[in-house]
Image 1 (tube, rainbow, N blue to C red):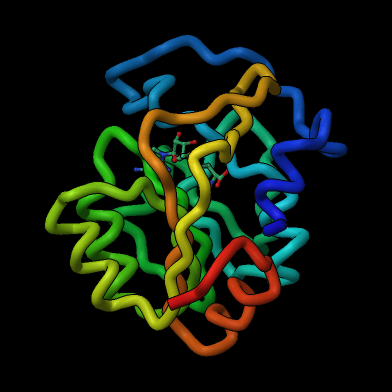
Image 2 (spheres, rainbow, N blue to C red):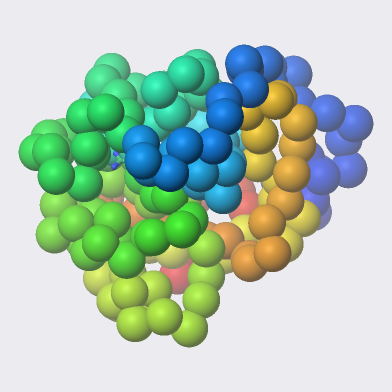
Length: 174
Ligand SMILES: C[S@@+](CC[C@H](N)C(=O)[O-])C[C@H]1O[C@@H](n2cnc3c(N)ncnc32)[C@H](O)[C@@H]1O
């Protein structure tokens, strides 16, 4: 049984963060559809530290093990990226994030799988990619587990990052 199936069978995650609820504010770019945080077991399984989380909530501590975090106030899409990046982009508008990730070429991205051209570009550019089963749950700002409609994948560019996907043991890394 792969790690994701084991995780799904368990009652809960040990270190979920509880956050203050944040009101929807279109002007700031905040929308609840973007606030789906990565569960900590993914980072524990990969055993990797990142130099930068390129898109991070501004009012919430996530499980992402990174040295630096860009929030919407910094605009991670417009800012320079350096080193190994973690990218779980806003689901409302992932295309430009995916293209910047491909250009940057060092990191791991957690994205929804789709028939979009951007996903196909990522599929072709990634050194390693693994499909996550549809029972993956994210963490909401209220600290609850929640799945999304689309299946997701982890895409790695860079040899060390591909190795981290293998360590995670979620399925075949192609
Ligand atoms: C899917 S969540 C991922 C959060 C975190 N990186 C993780 O993996 O748990 C995407 C985050 O990007 C933030 N965001 C939206 N637009 C952004 C921007 N232009 N620059 C940086 N962060 C942004 C959202 O507020 C949201 O918290």
